[in-house]
Structures are given as structure tokens and as C-alpha cells.
Length: 106
Image: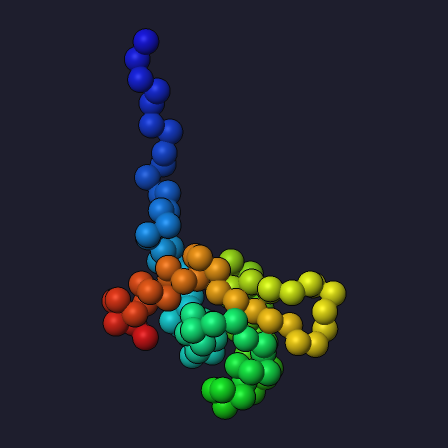
């Protein structure tokens, strides 16, 4: 019996290899870069991120939403919670941030 054929299309992303579309997406916005970098250091609320960086909370919240849509950050508390929403970086976001740093892109 012959071995099974490789069904991979060659575009598979391994955990060690961030998606370059996501890399480009993050570096194209100072707010997305800032939020991802801050969350790499540890979980935080939008207010904490805004206070720590001096950016408007509206910009921070938009960046969080965009990064969350890409699976790079996640909400660590219930969706129902309106105040004190804590966000953290995902494994994918962590690998992407490390790639940005190692490539000198941030």
C-alpha cells in the first residue's frame, strides 16, 4: 500500500511562522502595534492601555477590536461584562509580536 499523499497546499502556517498578512496589518497602524506590544507584557483593560500610552481610549478600543478579529488578542472575561474588560495576547499574537521584534519591524 503506498503512503498517503501530502494534501497540504503549501500555505500552511506553522505556530513558529506568523502569517505575513497579519504582520503587515499590525505594523501598518501605530495603535495596533502599541496595543499588541503592551499586551505582550501582560493582560490589561482598554483604560489601562490608554493611560499607559497616552493614546485616546477610542483608538485603543478600535485597535483591540481589530486585533481580536484577527485572533491576535482575546477578551479574558465574559462578553457580558461592560466595564473592566481585560484583554490578553493569544499564542498567535505572541508569535507575531516576537517575529516583529526579531525582524526589527517595531
